[in-house]
Each structure stands twice: as structure tokens, then as C-alpha cells.
Length: 414
Image (tube, rainbow, N blue to C red; front, side, top):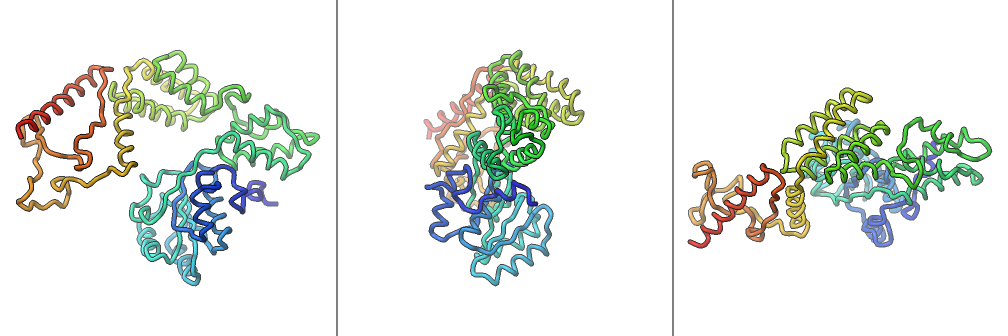
């Protein structure tokens, strides 16, 4: 018999749970399908939240022929065969899983077919395509991010699974909350756990013991009124940010019982740069070293380097100035204020004798010379706002302000 997760996979847009910004009443993908249009696109987001399902539903809705291609395991010959098959149709969809792993020779072969529209590609990835997908491929696609499924979304899927197996099947609230938390936001994980628990349940009733017996995994806060795993990660970050070392150690201890070092070490790495940042720039490498040791030795020994680094992080000076600065810069990009590079900064710049050429800062005192680096539209913008949270950032502040003062002085004499 087919697994329940496979049988429950939606075939229509209205059957998909979540992702309303894409497939809801006003969702962009729904609007495109209503116009009988499907451009090449890349769908990205966490595992098990509906990327492949949406790709399949798109093909089903428009009755389009399609083939699947896995960029991690399939080769160029498989791609060539799929594209050759696609030439026999007026519209043909190639669903490319793990597109971020696409090799260069496959990219080169695929690109002209994307360019001339002979195939429609739907790429699927768990990694931000702006960082991981070849720009030539990405620029020929629309890019859509899938949102994490909410607890309400997962609960709806849970009850669908119960009804699909046996309308008489019930489960304890504690078991329900347990399933929702161990799923980690993934639909397949949730459905597989429920399906197997139903097999061992007595009298059509799934208990917490049944759920634990199937999952065999320690979970934090199985009661809905307690912190979930990701809430606890948030508590850890906020405690470190607030310099409360005891609370930080408490949440670290809770998280260590979940046996998920990967998510924990990722969050610690982010905290080092988001919340400590320029106040203690050595913290980033120190956190990476501690996390690498923790991952290498595994639990229970991992608690030693992680406990030490969390104490260090909590008691460290804090600054989010760099975090705020990059987000301010990103906001301008999102608002269309990218502008054009000044000609003298371009790699291919050729001096025409009419405009001032690039000045090499190392040829000037203090390795600094006043010249324009930002596009004209942003030439007077300031993103970085220094803080006095440590001697290091105070030194950065002094240099930053002296550079601004020198620029202002030069302008007064021009």
C-alpha cells in the first residue's frame, strides 16, 4: 500500500495547506494559473512544506506534461532525454529538485532551452537561490519563497491524516501536541508519525505513549502551554542578547535534550553576528570553533564546549550596528534604489579623459582618499550607525566619523 503521505498529497490548489501568499485567493501562482500561464520559477523554503506539491499541482491544474530531474543525482544524459521529450509538446515542464546542486555542464545545456522557452522549469531548493543558484539560470526564473507552516496548518493536516486512515480514530491532546512539535514544520514527518502510531493504537485511540513509542525521540515541552523547540531557541537568543547568562544556560540545557545540535549551532552562529557583532568581532570565530568541536564529538560531550561559549556570548559586550546597517542597505535594494556604479569603480573601466579616474587609496596618506563609491542616487546615504558598546567599536566610530568629517571638509572647498 502507498504511504499515507503520498496518498494525501494535494492534487488541487484548494487542497494545499498554507502558502496563501502564493496559492491563496490573491496568490500570484493562482493568478498565473487562472490566466493559463506558468513561467519558469524557483520555489525555495524548508523541507516538507509544499515545494514539490505546488510544482505537481501546477502541472496537474494546466494539464501539462512534465518530468522530474534531480540535480544532485541525475546526469546530463537524463536531462537531454527529458528536454528531447519536451520538444514534442507545445508546453513542457521540467521539475528540477535540488537545483542548487546543478553542475555547470548541466546548467550550460539547460540555459538555451530556458532562454528560448522550449521548456518551462520549476526549480526546487531548500537554500536561498540568490546565494546558491547560478545567476544566469536564476535571472530567467521567478523566485518564490514558501513560508513555514504554522501550528494551525500542521493541525489541519494532522486531522486530515486521521480521517483518511479511520474516521473513528482519535488521539489525546498530549499526543497531538507531541506530533506537532516533533514534526519540526515538516508535513511528511508529521503524517508518517501519525500513520505508524495508528498501527499500534488500541481501540482507535492514539495515546502519548503510542506517539513516543513510534517517534523514539526526546522532545522539549510536549504540552501546548510550554515552549516548543523553536520558541526555546528564541528564548536562548533573547537571553544571550540580554546578557543573562543563567537564563542562557537554562535554555541551552533544554535544547540539548532535544539531540539537535545542528539547529542549535546554527542559531549560536547567527547570534554571534546579529547580537554581538562589532562589539566583540572575535566572537564569530570563537563560536564557530566551539560549534565545530560540539558537532565533532557529539553528545553528551558537546555540552562542554557549548556551555563555555554560551557563557562567553551572554557576558560579551553587545552591538547590532552591523546587523542594522546591512538591513538598511537591503531595504534600499528592495525599494529599487540600487543605482549604477560610478564609472571609475567598474572592473572594465576605461579612462576617457573627461571624468576623474579611480584613485588607489594605498597611494594616499592613511590609505584613504575622498572619492565617490556609492551610486549617484545614494551618494549621501549612511547605513552604519556606530555604538559605544566596546573599545573596538569606539575605535571604528572614531575612524568612521573622521572619514565623514574629511569628506565634508573637502566638499566645502570644492
